[in-house]
Image (tube, rainbow, N blue to C red; front, side, top):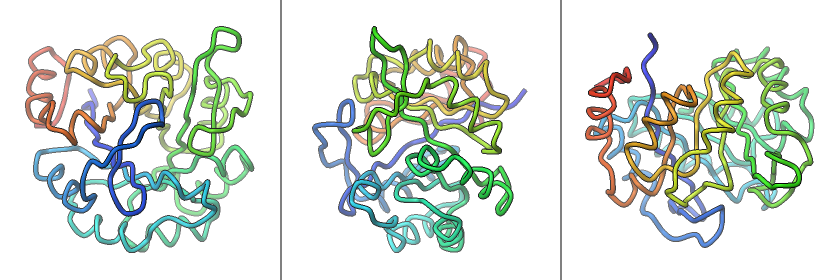
Length: 252
């Protein structure tokens, strides 16, 4: 049985790690390089770095900062934000990134997923899907750091990106993000059943039980969180030891 992964996320704005609620009200959470080193030492399985303003500011990811973070790590490292071409991904891979995460660019031109998978291999390509729930439309996909509703059904879009060759889906519930009320188990479970690639659940983690639920009930392959790790509310080793005690396979 494959082990479940625990992944801290660095949302980066203006060179600093930030965290908000439902993508709003951002507050400072520390230096991304120092946090990355801390998480690698604590036993994180992977690290995700998201340059959250790159797309809206129409610029590339902060490459020097990515390089500095990568230099502190001995675990897989995923970077997203402002990636829109084969050249962008190549630049990141050359500067220490293991996986590139695309979001808005994939929705603008879905063929980009196919091109990246052929050029670099599916294992390097993550598609990030930000979804919000409404009573009228269910779970729909948003882009541009959660500011634009695409009108696309989230599960259908996840199925398409998997079919096009991405190696992993980073699934964030905007409705749960930063609330600490738990992951979106319904959405995560529907996506996990609909695709054959690993699903990383993101948005809403506030307790160890929330990770247990998303692994056992929604069959997520990894759980991603930010503020509970940044502000010391849950330790990574404490989390993993509890999960293992409950029969969930994790790497200690």
